[in-house]
Each structure stands twice: as structure tokens, then as C-alpha cells.
Amino acid sequence: MNTRMIIIILFAAYLSGCATVQKSLEGQRQRSVQQEKLAQAVKLIERGNTEKAATILAAIVATAGIPGITDEALFRLGLLTVPSDLEREEISNALKYLERLQKEYPISPWSNQAASVTEFLANAPRHLQTTTELRRQLKSLKDLNLSLTRENKEMRLNIEKLKTLDLELEKKAKP
Image 1 (tube, rainbow, N blue to C red):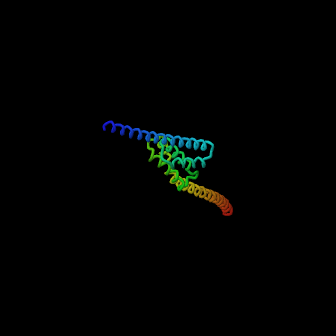
Image 2 (cartoon, rainbow, N blue to C red; image 1 turned 135 degrees about the vertical axis):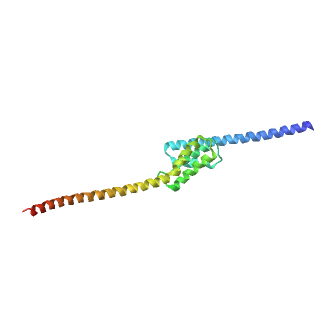
Image 3 (cartoon, rainbow, N blue to C red; image 1 turned 90 degrees about the vertical axis):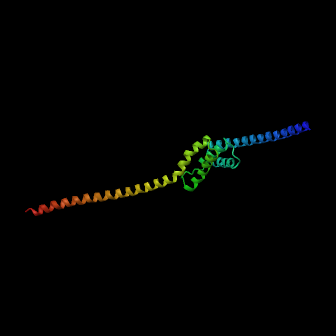
């Protein structure tokens, strides 16, 4: 009975070992496929085809996370989705990827880089609004300055006319 139990245990261990090896091979295959996709996306970014690269990166981040691949894909996708005009609604898409990267992969080197980009993007709308307001004030001040310059010229002309008139009155007043 004892030998039979040992054989059953060894057989069960053998079967579970096969399943573990199979699972490991599947994970390695998945990692390899994702790594290929990431490399393809990086090449597309280098060539300027950011739309196709973003599609591939989105497919990578939609699958189960693989450290070293998904974190880089999240970072690159976050950067690709930053709008050129920094419109608030579109910034939130980029922030979503970068914040997910920081949350799911806190020790990733990409997470460290994402932190500063996230902070910049989170404050960008406020800075843009301030900049827009300052530009508006600058334009208003330039217009006011132009108006004051014109008034100043008019006043100088009027002063010159008054001086001339005053001299003429003095001449007439002297007999």
C-alpha cells in the first residue's frame, strides 16, 4: 500500500509539473508576442506613423500585463495621446494611461518618467488658461498704450497751438 501511495504521489507530481511547464511556456510565448508588437510599435513611431503605433500599443495594454512590456507600452501610448493643443478632454486620455502605469507598475523605470509627465499634464490646462489670460491682458495693455500715445501726441499739438496762440495774444496786447 505504501508503494502504491508513493507511485500515485509521483504520478500526480509529474502531471502537475507538466501543467506548470505548459503554463510557463504559454507565458513565455505570450511575452514574446507582446515584445514583438512593442518593437513594431517603436519602429512605427520612429517612422512617424503614430496612429498605427498607437493602435498596436492599445492592443498591448488591453491584454494581461507583462512587466517590462506593458509598462513601456502604457508610457509610449500616454505620450502619443497627448494632444498638440493640450485640450483638457484629450489630456485626460493621456493621463489615464500614465496614471495606470504608475499604479500598476510603481517600480518600473517608465513609471518614474511618467510621474513628471503626469504632473505637467495635470497642470497644463491651468497654465494654458493663465497664459491665455495674460495674452489677453497684454493685448489690452498694448491697445491702451497705443491710445495713450495718440492722446499724448494730440495734447502736445494742443500745447504747441496754445503756446502759439499765447504768443500771438502777447504780441497783440503790446502796443
